[in-house]
Length: 143
Image 1: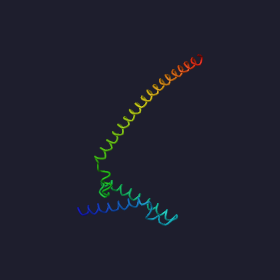
Image 2: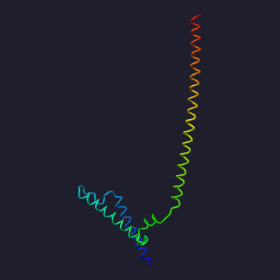
Image 3: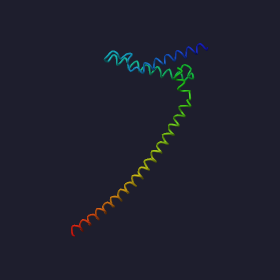
Image 4: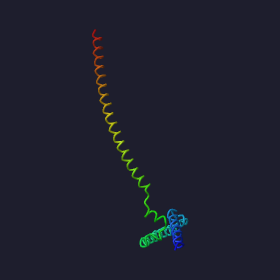
């Protein structure tokens, strides 16, 4: 029984790896021949392979994943604490950084309002100074 399990795991692992290689090859296996035949062959093989993998996965559901390749069993049945923790911390960091950015934006708005008010006051002071200078010049010209 141990030998049968090892053979099944090795066999399913090899087939799964070959299918993933084929799927990721972008048609290099068949598409070297240009034209409709190469294109049709590539899409036919890809469709049939997806169909067979779907059947393989459904049959694996019936027997509890025994004939599935180890990659699929690991993906479905394993629980990676590091990934969940990192996802939570990433979400927390994103929320925290968004809050920090909101605070920074609000403080910049307040600072901008203060600067604008200060500039208005300075402009008004400069206008008054210009009026005084004009009045002094008028007095000098009259004299």
